[in-house]
Image (cartoon, rainbow over all chains, first blue to last red; front, side, top):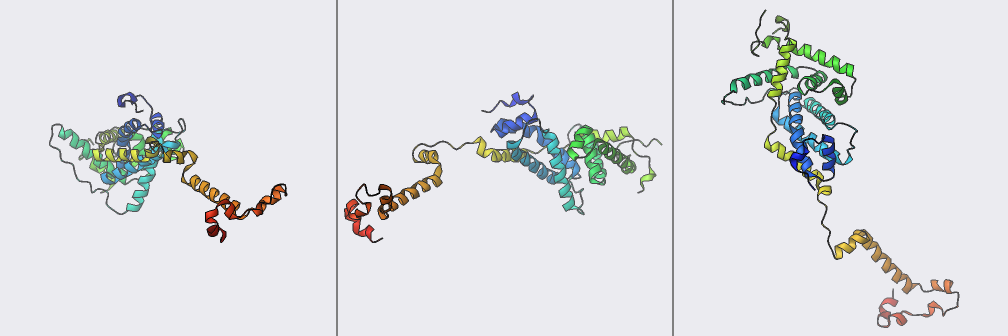
Amino acid sequence: MDMAFDALDGVSDEALLVAYGNGDMAAARALTARLTPRVLGYATRLLGGDRAEAEDVAQEAMLRLWKQAGEWRQGEAKVTTWLYRVVTNLCTDRRRRARGVALDQVPEPEDGAPGAEARMQDRARAAALDDALAGLPDRQRQAVVLRHIEGLSNPEIAAVMDIGVEAVESLTARGKRALAAALAPRREELGYEDDR
Amino acid sequence: MRMTDKRPLSDAELDGLFAASRRAAPAPSDDLMARVLGDAAEAAAPAAVPAPRRAGRRGLLAQIGGWPAAAGLAAAAVAGLAIGLWQPEALDDLTGGYLASAAGYEIEDLLPSYGDLLGEG
C-alpha cells in the first residue's frame, strides 16, 4: 500500500529506498523528486556544464539506485554518499572517453523576465566557474564541487571518494587556489571590482 | 593570458561564485523525471506487481511446482506403466513363488484388445 506523498517528507532516503524495494512506488516518487536534482546538478558541474550528458548520467545513476534497492540494508551507507560516488565514477568515465572534445558548447539560455539581470550574472558566474573547474585535475574538481557547491562535510567527501579526510582537505585547498588563480583574469566579467 | 597578471580571487569572491553556481543549478526537465520514474517502475516490476493468482489448471500447476514438475510427473507415470507391462519377471524376485508367477500374465490378460499392438514392442 502506497503512503501519501506528503507524509514522506520526514522519512530518510534510506527508509524510502527500502520501502521502494518492497514495492512502494510513492517512495520511488519521493526519492526521484529529492535526489534527481542533486544528482543532475553534481553531474553537470563535473561535466563542465554539458547538460545532455549530465542528464544521461543522472538517469543512469538513479537506475543503479533502483536496482540496488532490493539489497539495501538500512544503516550500512547513506544513499546520497552512494549516489555521489556512482555519479563521480560515471562522470570520470565519460570525461575520459570524451577527452579532446570541447566542453563549453552549451547554448546560452534566453531570459527576458524581470530579475533576469541577477540571474544572468549568476549564470555568467556559474559558467565561468564551470570553465575553471573543467581545468582542474579530476580529483580536485570532485572534492571542490562536493565541498563548496554540494555542501558535503569532509568525512562525507572522504567516503564518496574513498580517501582519507586529510587528502580531502588537501585536494579542496589546492583546487580552490587553482580556481582563484585561473579566474583572476576574468574578475571584471564576474562583476568583481579590481580594487588594486 | 598569464595568471600572474592579476591578484587571485579572494575566498569571499570564490564563495560568491559557488553560491551563484548553486542558484544557477539546472532544474531537471519533466522528461528526465519521467524517465527516472519509468526506470523505477520497470526495475520494481517483479516485486511491485505480483502476478495475479489464477484458479484452475494454472493454480494446480503452480501448486505442484510448475511445468517442470508436471513433466516429471508425466514421465514417471509412463515409466511405471512401461515397467509394469514389459518386465513383470522382476516381481518374481519379490514374491518368491508364493504367488502365481507374474511372468505368467500376458499382455492380453490386462489389455485384451491392445495385446497385439503392445506385445510387439
